[in-house]
Image 1 (cartoon, rainbow, N blue to C red):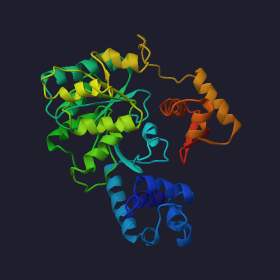
Image 2 (cartoon, rainbow, N blue to C red; image 1 turned 30 degrees about the horizontal axis):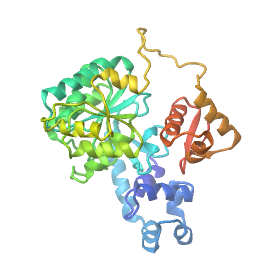
Image 3 (tube, rainbow, N blue to C red; image 1 turned 90 degrees about the vertical axis):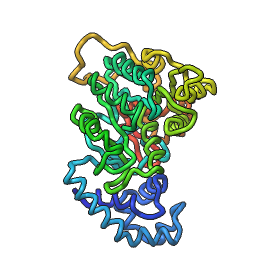
Image 4 (tube, one colour; image 1 turned 180 degrees about the vertical axis):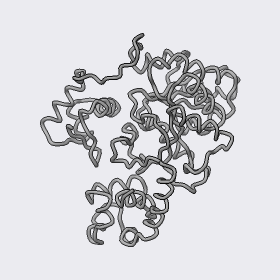
Length: 368
């Protein structure tokens, strides 16, 4: 535990400082501690900071006290704290403008696994939906993926349980602090997720209850930290649709399983397909094919990393561009390489995971 962590937590406790402004403050000031050491004159030069907010930052006593209290909980529970500039912070999520400033994590699953998808759906799952969850895990387990969901009743619980049965790391993103589990009936499931190499992830501090307004925020994490959103069953409104909307904003792939036209919890999937928001899939194999996953080898998992990193032509092009300058923004790279936003994001993520580039404040990148 250190004062740097205290400042990181305190930043999220300053009234009026949201996730977007928090990152801007850190970028302008050159660090999180430097935000609290800045003068009034310096703070007022930062876009979005007025006199009232400057005062809140200049006199952060309550925020620092709350952060100190949270640090005791973190230490007692042996949690990981992931600030948005940390290497272990979900890199896919970092590229989303409204990504959480800080995350709290209990578990061992790699949040930057090469293959991560989320599987979501209605709380009123039918046998059809639960069977699809089992099929997804049974057929995709050889691809060494991680599956994310929200620990809710219905499809969320079904996919988490199917992951446990097939030795797939699964991450539950929560809409409350790590001092509780909601719904309470899933406490045992949550424990098993952690015990079997998965994890529990949240942006909420302890003593934060599961209020309704927290779940849309939870859903953006589910969408942002994964490569694709798979909708199994859903009505035309609800949490799954919110997650899909986030995934669409983040330029993520969206897939949906169709259902019978009169089934209320297939109407949402059918509508997403009809509106061409989601791609129709009728088999888990479609997910691997559409995401371009290579077929798994029959050999055991490789333990040693390759000595020499293999880059494809697109990755080499980005490396060449970054060799010309000390750092470049994602937008600059996108324009010079003539790639779409989603494509450049995927390439940069791949290069980060290969240890070739690193993300910098202000959505910039440089060679490692």
